[in-house]
Image (tube, rainbow, N blue to C red; front, side, top):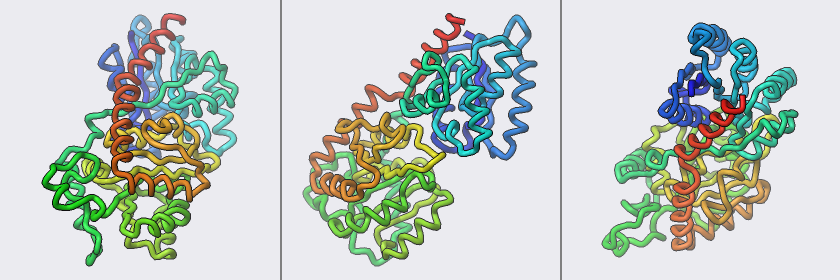
Length: 392
């Protein structure tokens, strides 16, 4: 099968959509005759990329060697895909992620909805995203849901990762601190008997962590204002680490200052991936306190699977595509986004009950290994694309 893949959200730029496109296209390219046209830099130059891609697609393939199917990395590319479909006379498939179809600009939504309806296969990364597409009048027979996956090896923290995280944290501690950081092995990996005997877990500083861009829908400011003071009252030594950066940073910093929580919150900013893995390896709980924001949705929640690989229970808002990434009781718990007390009670229970927390962490790793690898995900994409070619 000859495949033309077009991706505007691709490494070296970073983000969930970029990782997803890279992983799926890389695996499809290993199993098909794939030509990849990609852009991994600033979206400021997107019009030039689209113009160049259009003409590149027409000149790459002589009439006898045209691709069997055109595969687009997100819905914004659907107008381009519709033009290529008409000129090359080939079926077109597109991935929809969430925000690429909910952007609050009427003309954009009208154009994208029209283009999606004209394509042959519309793949949602979650059932929520697929429902959004059908809400734009894309026929159900053209829609399919394929959840995102995860690279287990890449997301499993090593001893070196955890050591890098401890070193990174120690460099940023505000001395003097009465709360020591976790010892080697006292995160989610069982510690040697001698370490456990000399120092028990309750004497270490419990860490909870959130990873993601600092945008409103992530709900970090709401969590800091509503849930964190209650959690600190129950666990005065708790440390909340937020790894990521974005336009909401200032408002989150203001909330931290207003509530006097600087000793319990660390806004880490953008940090190396090995340090993020290490922080997950020494943390106790992963938190996704998302809130609904018109025009900006969580299409899936890839970081929930990455946290599961590290053996972290995921406490997440019961919203949007997150419902496909977190299975209640398997790799975490889904809670109402506007009930901070439930978040606090659930986190507190896990911090107090080490055995339960570890059991959920082990279930989380098994859940991901069975259901959520990129190989399984890419296999589903290959099946759907082959079916599309066979029926065209």
